[in-house]
Figure 1 (cartoon, rainbow, N blue to C red):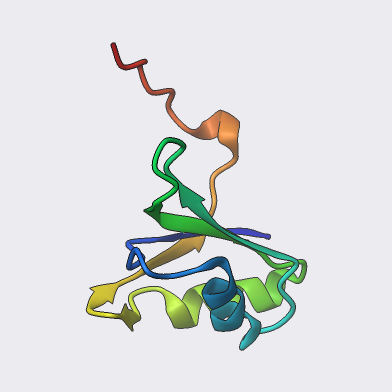
Figure 2 (figure 1 turned 120 degrees about the vertical axis):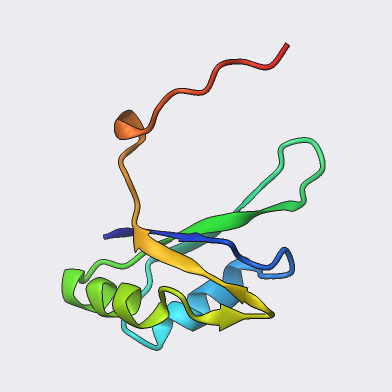
Length: 90
């Protein structure tokens, strides 16, 4: 199960995400998305949990949880093809 985690503090690392979600079960991958040019966190990431039940419980328990003054958003990630395409910047 691929899980989207948003509204994260910019200080959160891949390891922080891994630790937060491993409380609910096995985590196969955690990734903070960073800006291509600066390398700085964009404030969101993804966590892959192989067990659906554990992933559902993590979403239920973590969505809305406060982290460094921010209420994080946690939900099932949408497949890439379901997301609207952004127009290029000129």
